[in-house]
Length: 178
Image 1 (cartoon, rainbow, N blue to C red):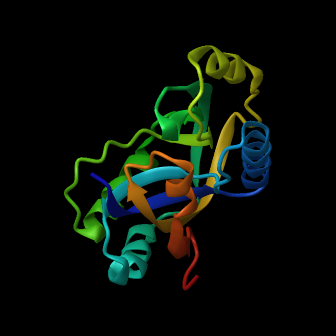
Image 2 (cartoon, rainbow, N blue to C red):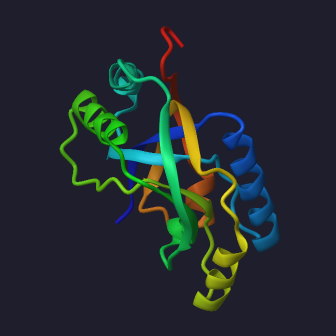
Image 3 (tube, rainbow, N blue to C red):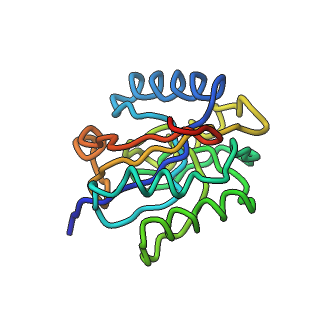
């Protein structure tokens, strides 16, 4: 059963943002897949778009840019994790997740698994493995500088679902009033 949710994304700062966007765009063109913004999903909550600006403002308080260590490029048979960069968990990210949960007053069972997807496409295990090994990590660590709240269909299982995503709020980390 599909439902509308709000996904809270951590967005990479430059130059990583442009680098990942270029890779996502190239893979999407090569594999006839959807284009999307590079992001790490920090939390997914019930849809309540009227309060999202407040949630982002509260959640971002006390956070400067967040740095995540890259671990590997990996893939899975799950549509939204076809090809992705896995990041190491750290205290800052766990604290941001708790902050968003608290600000959103959300008790969902979302499990934080820091990764940045590069491709959403159903493909054979063999093709996915070959592709995984062809990607080199461009950065040993990535700086993330902003949060976005995105209205999504859950679960996301198709190109149409991805193309229906809509940013409803945005907040820079470490800044006031943005």
